[in-house]
Image (cartoon, rainbow, N blue to C red; front, side, top):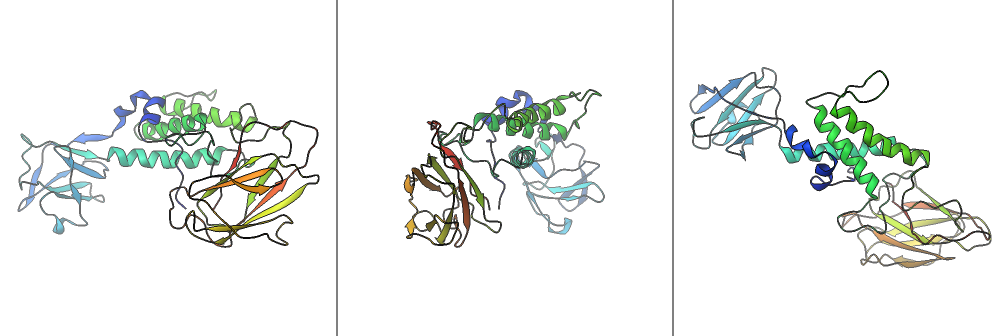
Amino acid sequence: MAQIEYCNLTTDIYRAYPRIEEFKVQKTMRGWVLHSGSVYKKANVGYGEMLFENNLPMAAVASVATIAAGKFYYDAANDILYAQSTTGTMVTTTNAYLWGVDWDTLKEWAVEQASGRIEALLDQKFPIPIPENSRGTSTQHWDLPIIQATALMACSLIVSRQEPMKFNPDGSGANAAADLFLAAKSIVDQYNAGTMAFSWELTKDEIGSYYIVPGSSNTSVGMFQLRGAYNGAEDETWVIKIITGGALATATYKLSQDNGGTYGSVVTTLATHAWQTLGNGLEIRFFDRGATTTAFIADNTWQIFLTASTNSQSRSGIGSIKLIG
């Protein structure tokens, strides 16, 4: 399953570290030497992934022999860059060549890596992937601190490509990469310590709390949310089981209120993300997480552990649990 990304590549990153544009890691290539025909070369360029001619990306090929107009080949073993201009001649007086990594690709890599690291730093008591904020928007799916922590971690990874993280003897950061990493980690540490709570967490004084555990062999990439307060008189274990796999409005499920012993009738998920009655004061709704054809896999199951209580007040918020595949 692809890594879920908890921040975007634009505003979230730039708000976390406004200087991030300084770390694009692209070098101007001059001093090309004719290799053969219309193919030119330049040695000792250092590792790179993309060659740009006048800010337009050239296409990479697998060997010098397959180079044509507008294409390049990097011989990593010998650190030699070969290229043929779109016009056939590497005229550096009129053409500008930049060598390095594609900025969007680098940011995408950093956000993906950062999202995975944030998940790894979270205590095992929290579900992974991290559930969305049920009050979020179409552009802000998760709690703001998690968005910020991921963006800070992504910036740390980008900066550390040029300035490896350094720490002082007391554990404080000795450069920007380390400072950004510590800032991200401090947010996660607050969640782990219980000094900050996710919007979907159930508080200690809630009536009818619940906890969800996915089946160990689940491969569904969708998610569901629960809301409400369990009003049963006894603790129970319920099971949600996917019957028909597929997209929303195609996928169906059943509910067992005796830990999988028996199941109720088949219910079809709703494409509108609308709430459906689950029972005993609880409601459920499903999300496809962008996997519009295979969001839910048949026979995947999730246990819902329900705790009865009659002496406390229900929260006004919503508890949400991400399906884990």
